Length: 437
Image (tube, rainbow, N blue to C red; front, top):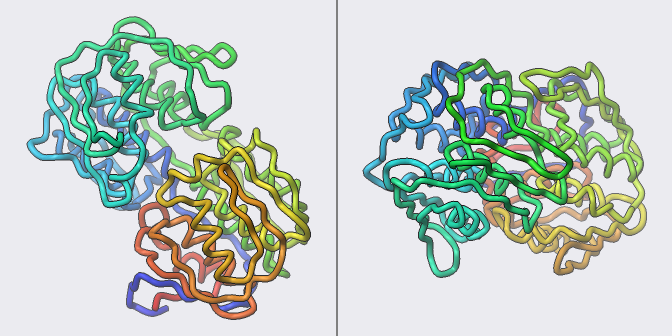
């Protein structure tokens, strides 16, 4: 592999994916382990922490607020300061590209005794934040943002929060988790009602840190916490990162790949249902539970796919996997229709438009709708792609490059390191002909 770490990927068609591969640790779980470990009492040991830019931005923010964190690249030790032990930081906390960091930390910081300001990179500064600010204000938080509802977020400390009952207007694990973190500090009970399932990593992890939530149907109740207790966490491999290899091994003829130790939380793995509906040959092996999370090895064999109407009840659970799923749809026989996915338009890029742009540039017939896309299965021609600085768009078209007629050049790939450090090296190990240019 080239030693130059450029900002563009070049993928040549061909190759077969085989063997056993382990993708990096789960990003969502890594964020939550760091946050809860920081406000717990005693030390938390985190194994498998994702060493990506997003999660390291979370760690840096807590270090700036006085939390001692020792990270040797394999084991992360977080010396918790307790629920009320954080210190104010004199400058703004820069969360880079991480929407999870800023939304969850807005909830946590709204209950602290000090003022806070949150900022991010160019992309994050444009993403919608009123979805977390409005319910926090109803809990008595004092929070300001721009007139457009974007960063910077300025939080006034010293406010006593009170519990609320809140029905989520959108299916958002970030919004739910934000309010649960605020609920740890709020007088009374904070009750969240979610009419569509979203990933439940926060609920599971709070239990691991000895704070019990109550769930009845769609209602989740969080009482004010006395304390959290530091613990030991083993983080599984990230399902959203595994998604690119699941699609690649499905599409590339002759592939037979095992992805080891992947988190298969049922509020996270709807992509497996979608892919199997399309005809993918995917099985789960060695299923187990570690640190409260379901884990398995995912075995994928190449297979031919057929287009489907993607069930809307899968959309919120597979929202981060859709760039990969849409590449699979572009290679499936017939038409695939995605609806109910308007949330894709407010990710790191407008992912509906970004995928459409890429399809149009590489010979795939597709049409964007307000909340989804209609794709006609075909053959990727190859060509040049603008990833719009979106890590998942870049990796999705890297997969497409393996089964393209000609090479694929993908521009603006720096942000791949936010969620998947070492993507190129691991892809080459699995059998992809990819390099930096």
